[in-house]
Image (cartoon, rainbow, N blue to C red; front, side):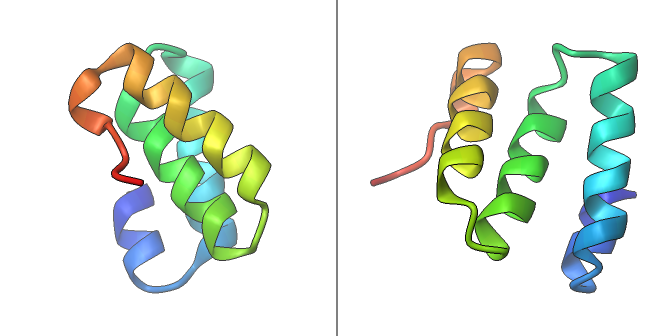
Length: 66
């Protein structure tokens, strides 16, 4: 659901879905990555990078290219 909300530029809704997913499963790399995309879109680079790093630690396939 978070990915759908994000694709429709519903950043608040997407962030709520990703946050709820992380509450249920803190090891959810996809939710970490999605939350990072939300932060990135609103210009919160530090928070975005933290979420991207967390996602990559959980699942190396989420590596961001520099």
